[in-house]
Image 1 (cartoon, rainbow, N blue to C red):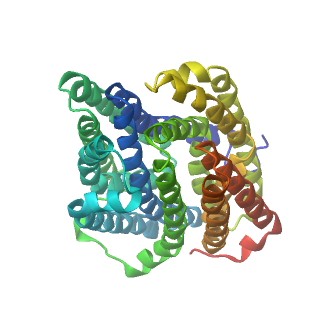
Image 2 (cartoon, rainbow, N blue to C red):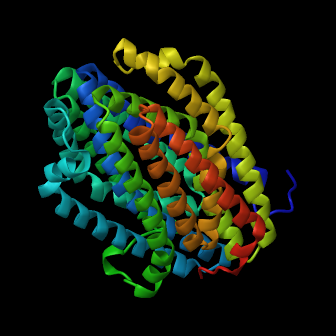
Length: 446
């Protein structure tokens, strides 16, 4: 790599490698819940999967505000404005805590009605496990939202190694808690939810303590004293709200598709959950690179360096393609062995294997264009285009395609994944055109 760019090769390695590890550790929490709960049977796996579908929608909102904060903070840092960067960091925590606490307070009393509304008539055992797991997950949202904001701030100042180490701590607590509460105490999905709650409390507490250090570039000392700045919040919301709508529309579509899967039976729900975990495994490195894209492109854009914006967009997209391929090839080979860990019935295992393998092929060819490129557009403030492109693609291909293939053509759970790949193709094409066109250069954040 040439050295006449804003970030050296050493800078990139120091930022990206811990983020990839952090991405793996974050996915491991959800994966541990599904795998360790599988000892309780397909109904337990299905219950956890349904809650995760709803939870991912709400977590998307937290991530959207964290992304908005990260873009604003990164651009202020690139511009050399440390004061506004620090004030933006504090205001990100304010809105993250307020919104997550409100969500928990509203959803907790009506959680059973939400499950009934979204997924209709599911087996009584699945519904019982769903409610057991949902309560502690809901209580964890304020801690998770603040943790997401703090880690986004830390990434903006290139302190990704720290976020990785906190993720290690959270995984130790989560997996250890699962082992005790599921296997030892016999709490099943409720135990998995309690362990996740404990891990998120710990992560939030540790990150907040670290960010209070007065030597921290973006320290949040005096958080209770302010300043509360509507001006800075407005700038973050200018990124966060469209990103939140985009993510919410994406996950509402996924919930509708999950409802369609639920109508196919418990076995289909479990197969879909396993394939969903496979999708997460394949994109571990890509998700870490996506997070790095926000910091790198955001700082380049804050400095007005559009040449490096283009350079790093190309570089990071290529890295996402290569790293995803490296993960997918060995997973393709050992797919039968991995799927067998989930405690599915033999017929379900046979059906899940080709679905998971096709997912790996799509991930290492289509996924980076559909999910890495939009992070570049977010980092420069071109969020309205992302909202329009993703909304169109999601509802036309993933939702419409899935319902057509299942309801009209009579296909099974595999149709859900075919429709998803059509969605990736369309949105990847739209994002690639936008990046190449250069229309993003007219967008401003600060």
